[in-house]
Image (cartoon, rainbow, N blue to C red; front, side):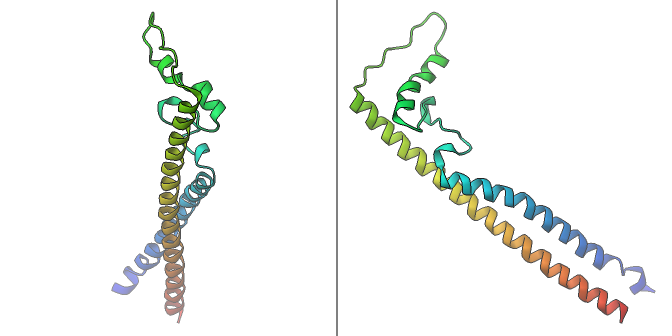
Length: 144
């Protein structure tokens, strides 16, 4: 009588774990794909092409065009934005440094997310198949 009373607990547990594993897999595949795209092109990732100071880092010309964007946006009314006094060589050096920093940051973040989502995908697949196989053996022993 006791075994018949609790016979549903094992299968219910197994099916719940399988459902959770499938949902975990689906959610992490999306994150894994996003991180792979961001790793391939770090300047176009989730943070967008704008690096520190609100300047675009996709090209030097875009950087020049958007260099004072942040100052213009945060400037108080009736105040003037200071004129740019950097030479082209100084601006290019600043652009290269900011661009390299942005690529390094975004690449690291993407690599970290690839590893995290990859591990969760592997764990979800392993849990699913282990519990699915366990459910099949439970079903076979119950019918025997």
